[in-house]
Image (cartoon, rainbow, N blue to C red; front, side, top):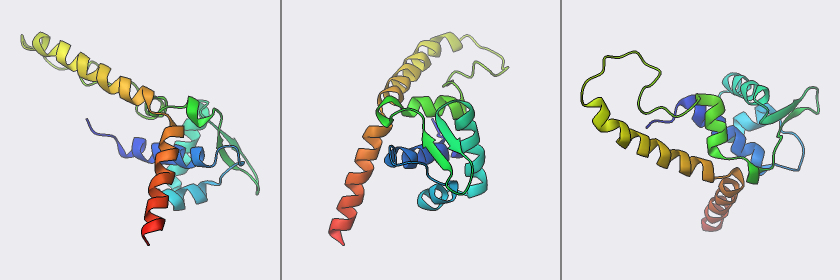
Length: 143
């Protein structure tokens, strides 16, 4: 399974918002710079996340973006579902010829999808923020 660039950038943007949760809004330029995301692309992702109800945006010079829910209530799976849609290892949305072996692997792919879904649904942005802060303090400590 590959994570799309869209999902990768979106997850990093939400991580940035989760680390600032409760301290007000963050401007897209600051998110882009901190997470090394092209700002024009980030704006599109933030609009999609806003339309889905995961973030709130405020216009104006003191505006920016912030999470609607607490980082401990928001999972990686929530963001991936908005940006990439449902997980589909079996290609159910594709028109392709089937063969007799399709049924042999259907249960395997279903089990893999379930395992991935379980993991991404259990990892919260509060946990990711904590991990990120620990890594940052380890890097700072070593210097």
